[in-house]
Length: 170
Ligand code: NI
Image 1 (cartoon, rainbow, N blue to C red):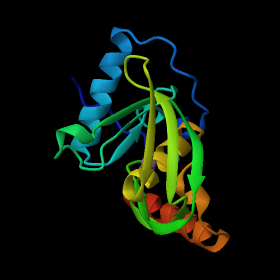
Image 2: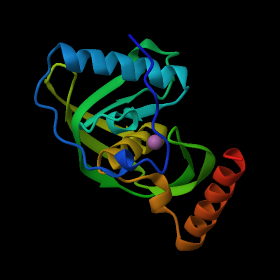
Image 3: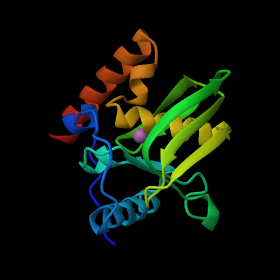
């Protein structure tokens, strides 16, 4: 296993639409293991493949960040098949360090996907897991959580980000 580099905003790979996973062989297993290790090391509750530069519909999620063995979820080609309600909560992203803001999401979701061996699975979730699922599926569609906030907040984020970048490159 190896820790991979997490691509940071505004890297264009984060904006690319990902391709469905079709082969479940050794390469995919290696990528999944690396992504899990990278997520735990960060630490974070979720990581999408394009965040490590691989444009595949693959994400790993663990809302316990490795503290509960059973809570690791590996999803290939995930799709939201049902949603209910709305919840606003603070959210951040490993690709946008040191920034978090309130984002509105569905309160409950059902997600259909394939597991790491290509077997069909379905997950019903609410709370943090529902939020993580929506956040990661957004990644796979080239979308970031800062796209889901209002115009004023978005302008504020862009300005702040540019300023910090200017400071750190001096
Ligand atoms: Ni993220």
